[in-house]
Length: 123
Image (cartoon, rainbow, N blue to C red):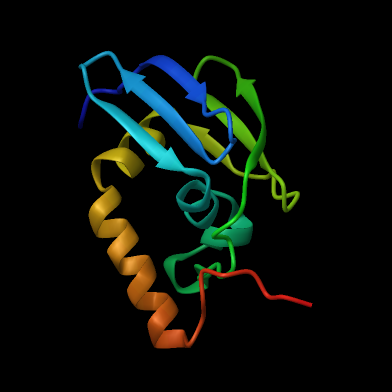
């Protein structure tokens, strides 16, 4: 079992397009709003099993509108597309930062395989 990481800093960028998080072990990550949105831990994105996980396209321009603390263990992020059901625990945020390269590459490969784009649909 790995030890839980605890944040020492959580800061939303002025343009609301990235979240900076630093942890008590000295690691720090800048996570884009797009990355956080497509990796939302919500059932809407993750499903109730790995087979139900969704690939979320069109979030290149998404912004974080609000950060709400959930107890002392997580935050709930509200995005400008009104998605607000993901609870981001400290361990999950650390994992997203630590594994960002591999997770992002896998996301881009999923988009390509499904013929989807990071760009929002224009109407």
